[in-house]
Length: 284
Length: 272
Image (cartoon, rainbow over all chains, first blue to last red):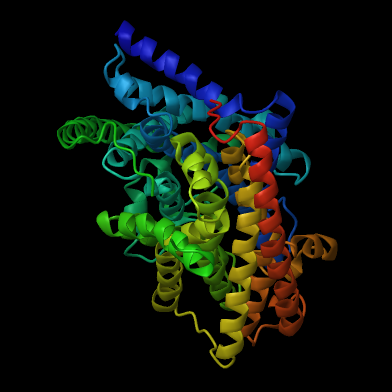
């Protein structure tokens, strides 16, 4: 257990250094502001071009919150899968990690944690931008903080195990899959109702979205910040779940995902050792 | 020994070769590089549909989504590739070899075009089949010209960036990361660029994709007057100027940065 905790702690520190020490703090701050704000502004402009209503509408808050929270999904999924490519092919240290007293599963979780920290910076900045510049309709005094904390903890755990699933898959791939994390995050963006309700999807695609933990995480997060009725008129397919049901489904699906990710990771690791993929470099 | 144009061409083919072979060795990229980006483009389609946007906007998003492939290719497989090659120890070999760096960069671009164009084509095809987007091919010749000149200007800019990134360490990676979303925003990948304030659009026009995307959309969807920023002919002329400017200046910048990197001993530097 202490080895797992040490692997996690050291990987988090290492990941943070890799993410942040390439620039002086001021430049890093600019970088942290520009990227998330421009990213969310794409949707804001899309919304404004069509709806032209003020940004205090319920749908705007629904979309803005979903998009902001989704920064975590991108950060953690990309962080874990990229850590495999970065360590194996760029720094060429993955083989050394394997011969060190490090638990690779917890090491990768730690690298994901580092991305969570940098992602948090982006989320805070984007939320502040939404509240101050776009007059987002969130009343901080009415936020259900306990529900918010529970949703965040379980949601982040689900993202971490999904990241490990993706990391296991990346272990089998060449470097030209650098974008695999972004691609999967992009695809999930469609399916989990991040910026539009699941009800807008074709009927045959909706069950896929309903099977994803991220769907319930985003919905519970919205309810904690905007109130239990936040999505009632917007997303009928999730409206019939109570707040506690949402959390239970999120917890259950996260546990299933964790179980699958552990076994898939073990299988992938074994195959990578057999095929000599641990120290593969592909200079395509 | 090969010289002049022959050497240039052979260098280009030599650098393109591993990319083509790499793509054919592991074909599962077809899934991650085509189906997945199609799904992420679809998210914007459903967003527009959820807010009752006119159907023309679906086509606009599909074209924007397809063009992201080229922007990502320029950013990650050209501009910051020299940083990656430097860390892998290949950059010094490129410089020591008789071929020119321009040929190596063009080889990277050409080699990556298979994956890039497949990704773009699948998104266009998916948009047509899944969302019923109707593209007008009434001006197909002008469309080809606009696309070709946009690509020339874009890849010229990629070469210019690569020369700047020659000096960078890990900053190169982060610079590419930083440039991704702002360009999606200011070049109007998912909305008509004409909707942005004039001064922003004018400044963003220095990025070839701004005018290129606008021209392509005007030609593919002539029925929607709100898509156009300025006339297609003016946009093509401006893109031509940008192509000449970027390709010309990248030639000088590459030579200058290469000399500077040699003098400062940065060609083999691996700052981590």
